[in-house]
Amino acid sequence: MADQSDGALQAKVARYCKILGKDPHSTVFVSLADTYVQLGQLDEALAVARRGVEGLPWFSPGHLILGQVLLARGEKALALGAFNKALTLDGECLEAFKGVATVFRQQGQLVEARQVLERAAAIHPEDASVQRLLDSLTHTAEGGSETAAATVASDREDPGEEPPAETPIATTTIAELYASQGLLAQACQVYREILRADPRNSTVRSRLIALEERLAAGAQTEPVEEPEPPVQSPGEVETLAILQRWLQAARLRRDYVQKHSARHC
Image 1 (tube, one colour):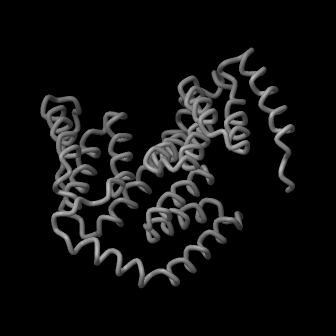
Image 2: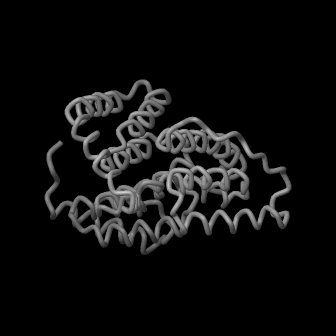
């Protein structure tokens, strides 16, 4: 497809802005944000996407475009949160799966990226783009496995060095999604897994203590079960937590759509 001229894109912007002027809650904000991205106007795209999801928090494509804008700006942590939110609302959102896989890949988490794409392929077996991404991951892994291994070994040589800030991002996102739905026991368990991988993370420890205090005060009625420590690596635990959340989200979304379809037609 040929690239559209700036003039044609600006005409789209004017048309979408006119629609939003008449209806601030129109879903056309997604198209407007995407057009701003094509024009390279990422600040404008971000402002539009954020206003859009504030007005339509239940609209999965809004969180998807927000994630794509944030990723284009290099804000991987926030982008991952937006993609996860899109998957919370629509557990089959193919582009959100791709977005999560892209973040993992950019962070060098190729195993996790592959697991996400394999999940997407299982849901959308007819989509050839997912297989191309999987093939691309294979080539990346084959070409960079020795370099990646050397980098990891080097990073671990200094015991006083703080781990990269983005290491537990996906897991904390999932934990907060659990907490926001009142599933405090599950949120606490995810935070415990983060602390096993990163015992010095004071922010996570404080959040875990706060959630445990809520549990002790009876904020959640179901008993808290302490499972045996998992044998998975931190990366595997992270991916399993995400996949488990998405599976649950798909069921919740179906219930939500059935109850609210008339309201949001």
